[in-house]
Length: 118
Image 1 (cartoon, rainbow, N blue to C red):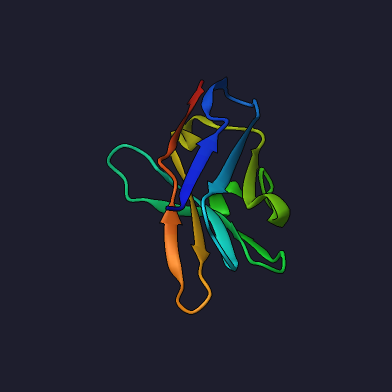
Image 2: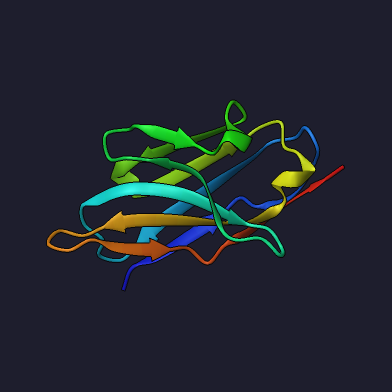
């Protein structure tokens, strides 16, 4: 059973920083992309950033220049460094992995709350 466990969320003032981590446990093979999504109350879940197996990254326009995604393949872990946080970044953040050898599956973390106060 594969589980993604997130950590690093919390309460921070506007302009502050947080670093989210998401580690996979269990038997997971051939991870392709890793990503971070977020969902604010009343909104749909949206992609924040993702990173491919060869390190190519993409970001939502709202976070470009402020957030950085990275991965450690040896640890099956993805990170999201969030700087210059704004109140509108407040949301539950979810990590997501796409992995599998013969067939690809999407795995999701349980979510971690990020709250940015003004």
